[in-house]
Amino acid sequence: MKKVISVFTAVAIIATFSFATTVWAVDMTQATNAAGETLFEDLPFGEYEILVTRDGFYSATATVTIIATEAGKDVVIDVELEPITKGKVIINIEDESGNVVNDADVKVNGGVDFDNLEEGTHFLTIEKDGYYNETIGFEIEFIEGREIYEANVRLRAITDGTATVTILDGVNPVSGVRVTVNGTDVITDADGNAVFENLPIGTHEITAYKDGYLTATGSITVAAKNGQDNHEVTINLEIITTGSVRVIVKDTAGNPLQGAAVEIRSMD
Image (tube, rainbow, N blue to C red):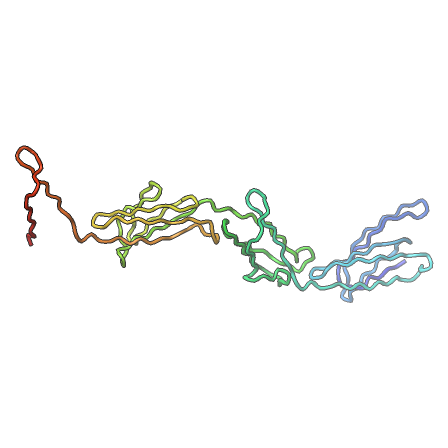
């Protein structure tokens, strides 16, 4: 008994059945030739399942029954394989505790077509307020089971942030300024920047002091938004150009004298 499978690929034939008192088990795999054929010979009568696979195509199955009336001739089965021409990605998003994260902004290669991906490398970007952004690279292969990529993503929640306070004199950066946030002092660098790390989410008051300038205040809000944990604020210091002199007049006994005339003159 002979059997011909007409397709250029790898072919497996599997069957388990009983004939009289004999149990037959057939499990063979052969590759098709240049004509797309392979021949399974000397098969006992019975029912067989045929599984056909090839890279770049979806697999296919068929069944065939070989009976006594067909003895001496081949049973021919034509099998068509559908080529794999597109891939897709499935995304599952959770937080660090394993809870599902809904309403995230997800893009693949900058767009939102998840079902018509070419073979090769692709990139997922996931953004959601309150979490750090994630970017993931993945491969689509036109091999059955690999044309669908399942991405399991865990987003890290933003619980604190970094604040950069820039001090200017109205135009130019001012170095050496003592900037205070939450009781922590940082001295500005040559670019007028003072950086505060690990600030909790929320609004924080700022004080900036340097000799020769009026003390300035401001605030900065650290928000877990857009996947960013770095926040910036600029504060302008005003140069002190005037001062004051307090004159206290007393008599020789140390008593304050009211009505004394006090004159002040410049020495320049």
